[in-house]
Length: 387
Image (tube, rainbow, N blue to C red; front, side, top):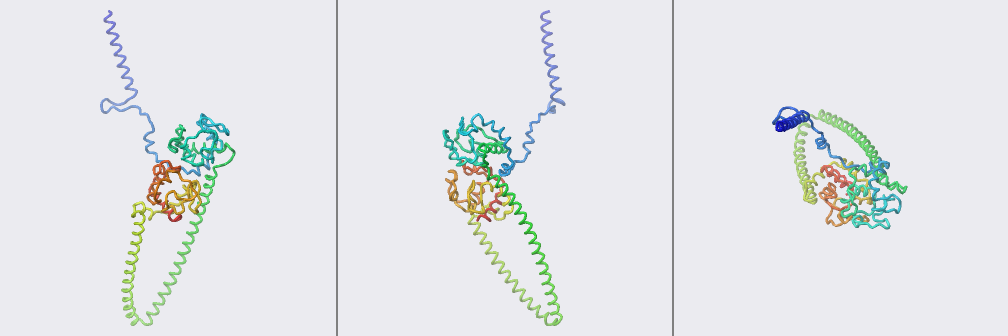
């Protein structure tokens, strides 16, 4: 009986495992076995949608600061409370953040800063804080701040807006002013476009009327003259026209060849002057300056091109061909000040495409302009206005 019971228990256990395997297969799969065995339930991880999503465009800081929400920034600040205080003079693991916007870097009394911050920036402007909060270690290599950073641009903007309220003063005036300036510039551009269209229509209309009048007068005079002395005039006009036409064609051909040769020579010399006529320089030569002007609006928060006045960044008057880090009165980072040469079109393209890769450790917080045609359009506009 003992042997019979043991065999029955073993067979019962095998039956349970077989039934369990059958039930699991019925729940989690469908179809037959072998190569045609299909999965019955697929967990959607969102990986396919993530691959199809287009790359996000670089944010417009002026507009983002204009629509910032300090109340949301207060919730983001909860991540900072472990190390920072908002009360004036109350240092913790990190320095207090009272009045940090527009405050000089490394200026809190009684706090021992690392040297990396002083090398990265001079003043905590809204733009500098925006870049620093994204990746402190990448912005200031060697900093003692161990925070990983805020990846969402909205969180950084809202946090900076909240910190700006700590001392009761509005120190993000650049962003607000640039937003208003962008609107005014857009309105001015629209007005100029309408005026240009009206002028063009008027010129075209006047030219058409004048051409019609001249043509009518010429035809009438020619007809009368032909009627008065048709026999001799026709013969004389034919000979004279043939002679004049031959001479004119020959002269026009010579002149065209001369002008074309001079033009080609000028283009060749200009191309040779600009890095031997690089591919990017040729793109700039045929670029859309109006499109470049629209792209330049991303730069207005920090740079001036209408006058030689420095802002958050140096002015861009005459930037094409200018020596690198050569603007008087602007305090450049060591990363840029250590570069030799001048701002050629190719160097400007590489710089604007990825500022951090071109000069690691520089203070420019711009993410970069990835599209080459956009960079060519921007260079064409800067060259036409600033040079």
